[in-house]
Length: 636
Ligand code: CUK
Ligand code: CUA
Image (tube, rainbow, N blue to C red; front, side, top):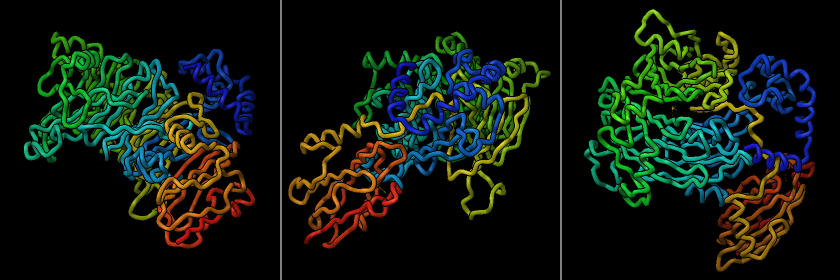
C-alpha cells in the first residue's frame, strides 16, 4: 500500500502545479502544532507520533473541530456519495459538505459526454440510466487502500468500478441471473471479492419458466473479483437479499433478508415476525466451486452453489425481527448489527459464535447477543471507534446513539439502559455513516445523516424537494447537528475518508482499458495520438478523423466528409496543465464531449445533410477559447 502511494506521489510531483505547492506549504505551516492535536485525539490508527505533513494538517484541523472551511482552505475528508436515480457518484468535501464533483457512472452525462463517447457507450452496453445506492472503497488490512470505489446499479444489476487516480469508471460488470442488485460490499482483508446481493427473487433461469410459481423463484449472492471485475461464483438462496456486509477476516459475507416468506406483494413480504440474516461461509463455498459441486443457470457460465432450503455448510440463517434492512460490522470486527426496520430493535450478532452455529453446536439465533430498542424504523448503523453505535431511525426521524457493550449487558438485565442519546434529524433518515466507520480506523469525528425528506428546511423549489444530508459532530460525548446539506436526489449511502488516503492525478493518466482501445486504434492506423491530425477513410461510408488540441487551437480547422458517413472523431488534448480541459462539440450532431489534459476521447456519429457545421471547444480554456473551432464540411 505504501509503495503504491509512493508511486502515485511521484506522478503528482511530476505534474508540478500551484495546488501541489500550496498543499505542501499548508502542511508545512501547521506541523508544529499538530502533535498536540494528535495526542488529544489518539484515535487515528496510523502513525500519529510521526505524522506526514498532510495527516498533521488533518489532525490539527479536526482537533480544532472546524466546521467552516474558509475560502481557499481544503476539507479534511473526501466523502463518496452515491447518486441514486441519477446513476452517478458524487464527491463531497467533509466537513464543508460542498459538492466537489459528479462522477458519471451508469448515466448519460451531457457535460462530459459519458454514456455517449465510444468507450463509455460500449462499457454501458448503450444503456443510459442506472440507480446507484452503495459506494464502498477497496480495502487492504481492514482499511481503505485508496485504489478503487465500487458502486452498484440496482436498475440493471451491475457493478461499476471507479479508479481513484483518475476518478473515472474503468470497468462495469453485468451480473447474471440477478435483478435489483442492491447491497454490495468488498472484502476487507485485501482487495479480494466484492459481494453483491440480488434484492429481487426471479425464476432461475429467467427464460420464461416458473413465471407463475413464485415459490420457485430465488436470488443470487454474487462474488466479483475486485481486481479483474470478473464474476467468480454465485450462491442461490430462496429468500431475497437486501444489504450486504463482509467481516474483517475474509471468512464470511452477510446479507439481510426481509422476504423470507417469498411473498410477491406487501402483505406476503410482511407476514413473518422474523426474517433473517444470511451468513455465507466463503471457504465452504469456494471449496464447492473448485470441486465442481455447482450448477449452471441459464446461459451463464458462472458456477452456482445451490443453497436453497435449510441451513447447510454454505449458508446459515440467523432469525432477525422483522424485515431487517441494514447490516453493519463494527470496527473491531466482532459484531454484525442488523437493523429491524419493522421491529424497533437492532440485533447484534457475535461473529465468532458463527462457526459453532455452522457446526450445529448452537442454534443460529444463539449468536444474537443483544437486541436493544432504538426507535421506530431502524435502517442503518455507523460506529465511532469508541464502542458506540449510531442507528438511523426512519419513522421517528432521529439518530439513536447507543453503546454496544451496554446493549450486550442489557440483554437479559432490564435495569441497564444502553441508549445514550437521540437527536432529531430532518427528515426521514435513510443511510447514516461516520468518518471511517466501515474500517478498523473509525475515527469518531463526523456523522453523515442522509435524510430523504427536507420539507421546510430550504427555500421551496417546487414539488421535487432536495434531500437533506446533515452533518453531525460526534467527536464529543453529545451528538451536535452542525450543517444542512441540500442534495439532488437521491444519494443513498456515503463513505467518509481522510484526504491523505486519496491521491488523484491532476492530469489524465494514459493507461487502463480506455487507452488500450485508443492505442490499438492508433497502431492500426499507423498514427501517433499526440500528433495525429488527419482524415482516414476506413471503408465505404466510414471515416475516422484525428484531431489534437492545444489552447486555443485545434490541429484541423476544417475536415470534409460525405453526408451519411459514419464519422468517428478522435480528439487528443495536448495540454498538460491542470484545469486546462478542452472539449469537442459538433453543431447540430448531438456530439459534445470533454477531453481532459493529456486525454484522448472519441465519439461516433452520422454526418447530416450537406452543408457547413462548425465544431468548437465547449470548455473555457483560453482568452481565445471562442476562436477554438473549425468547420466540418459535409459534401453530398
Ligand atoms: S438502501 Cu436506501 S436507505 Cu438502497 Cu442502502 Cu437503506
Ligand atoms: Cu479549448 Cu475552449
